[in-house]
Each structure stands twice: as C-alpha cells, then as structure tokens.
Image: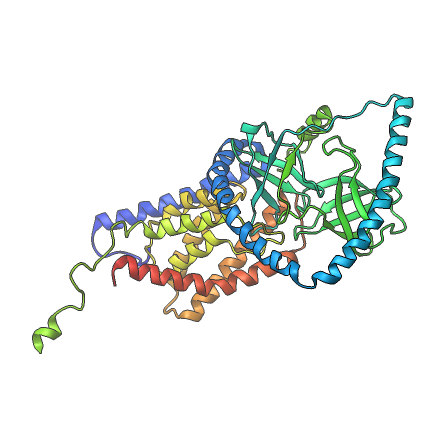
Length: 291
Length: 173
C-alpha cells in the first residue's frame, strides 16, 4: 500500500489488494472482539487465563532479581541515621507494649461477651498464598498479577488481602497465575467504614494509585488526616475489619486515601473465599457489565 | 582505481540476516511481552510498548510486515497486557490503514513530521484507553492519563532509534 500501484505486475497488484481486504477484515474482527469483551467480559476468560500462564512465570522468576536489588538499596538506607532511629523505635516499643496489654484485655472481654451472646464466629480461611509479581503498565485500569491460579483453588471473584490490608479481588484466573483488580482501580468500589467512630463510607479507586473515600450520608465531612478506612463486610464479598487505606488529603465531599497494602511492596498476598458466598454469587451476576 | 570504485562496499558474509522478514513482527511481540516485567506500577505512566514499537516500524518503512498482520499482533498484545480483548486488534489495524492514507497524501517526510504523527497516534491510543476504561466502569478524569501520554511521546524518539538500528542490523547494512 506504499505506492498506489506497484508497477505493471498483476500479481503484485492483486497481492496488495487482498492484503488491504485482509486488513479491513482484521479491523472489523477487532471491533467485534472489543464489543464482545465490553458486553460479556466472561467470554474470553479461558484464553486470558492461558495468556496469564505464559507471562506469570516470567514475571515471577524476574521478581526475585528486582526485589534483591531493591532490598540492597533500602538496606543501605536503613544504616543512615541509625542512632536516632534506634531511640525512636525504643520509645515506640514501650508505648506499643502498653497498648498490647490493653488490647489483650479487650480481646478476652470480647470473647466472653461473644460467648454470652452465642455469636457465630467466621473462621478465617485461606485459599492460596501468592506473590504480586507484576501489574498493568499503561492504562487507567489498575491490575496486578498474582502468582497463584486455579491450580491452587483461586476462582474469579475471590478477595485478596495481605498482612497490611486489602489488595483487591480476582478478575482473571489462569492455572498458575491470576489477575487482581486492585482497590485503587476506578471500577473497584468497596463498602467501608471509618475505624474511628465506625461511620459507613464508600471507597473507590482513583486509577492513579490512590483511593477516593466518600461518606454514605451527605453532610459534614467526617474525615481527618490519618484516619484509617476498614472494610465493613457489607455486600458479602470482602470480609469485614480489613484495613484498606489511610486518609492523606481532604476535599469537598470526601477525602483522598492511600492504600495500606502497597502492591509494589507487599511480599505475600492471601486469597480468601468470598465472605458470604451466596451474596457474592448474586453480586457477580448483577454486575456483569464491569469486568 | 576504477576497479576499486566499482567494487561494492559490502563484504562477503554480509547480507540480510535469516528471518529478516519476520524480525519486525518479532520485536513487536517482544515489546508486548515487556508487560511481563516484574514492575508494579501504581500510577500506570509507562508507555504502551507494543504500540510504540509498531508505529516506530511503520513510520520507518511502509513494508515491515503485510498490513493485515496488525490484527494478530494486536491480539497477542491484548492477551499479554490485559487490555480488553480486541482493543489493540482494532487500534493497530486502524493505525496501519491511517498510515497508508498518510503515505499517499504527504509529499515529503522529515523527523519532525514523523514525531508529530507519532504524537497524534499515541494521543489516539491514550484517548481510546481512557474511553474504553470509562465504558468498562472505570471513569477517571482525562487529566489522569495526560502524564502517560507525555511520557510515551517523549519515549518515541528512543524507540524509533532502536528500530532504525535493528532495521540496519537485520538487512546487514
């Protein structure tokens, strides 16, 4: 297609023409695929999972290299200003010890109260443990690649958390790797509440690594800088009382928060079953529009 | 000497490398595979490597691959990067068509025009990403994708330079 006609050869002219037709066909094929993947995101689950199985192990094997390099850099940084850091840590430790004793007492009291009320306690179950080995690079969507798949029992829709806090939920599952929709993705809306006071709020990703939090009831802005947002367990997908984010900036109708589980730094992520499987099943049929 | 002037500069053993015809397509697939790097980006400001290499090749030559290969290459990119399946298939085929039209219209080309063309194509890429994300339930302000666009426009010269070197290497020049 570079020149209008490649000389007098009929064969070359036909070749160009058919290549042009094939290109148009490819364009139409792409439009159909795109339409399908927007309207019925579950359609390509198998093939997307298979592709994940190709890229997942590459990322996992390279991951150890980069984490070693990062570890060397931060390890050297830790020696800087070590003496004053030591003093700070000692002060913090004594404060923490006092708080821990209080917490133990509260925990015991709580257990007694629960026994009195005969509340059913949810057992914490773990489906699989994996590493976050990669992420989406260049789109407004925020995905991460987890090195655990259907082979380990991971299913689409399961919540993922780390020791620091909530990471997100599974949206594609291959045999040995899966893709996680991070809490910082715009399409990930988590029912949450404020740790201080327990006011119900909604957490929604901003697509740039941060999270928007808004109170459910319109009115006074309840947030303060440093507030911790935790999951409320409403909706049945995410377990309650998992920390999500810390508020860093207030705005007109809510606040901007940073996820506590930074996907770039967490070492292990835990996949759990949906908190209320029945509720999650109805939820996944209702929001088919968003992958 | 006349004889020396007539002799070609090419030495024995120099010439197109084996698989030279497939090398451009292979480099595009390798660029798509860069998304398997173990980098966790929280902002998403990395360029769309596959598309960047595709337009670098296409702006350098009109025949790096038969035009319709854009569709299967795009499918590979979609699967590796996790874009909605069909996104790159459509965009890459449309890009090949658009650049064919541009080739017919432009009388001459220089580096600035190529960079401008690349900027327009990358802007279209980012805008479509933003639009498709909005359709998929992730509506963010367009300002959020502008840094990614600026970065990929700035990275284009580097990608074009690498592609020129690869082109000379594969043809044995």
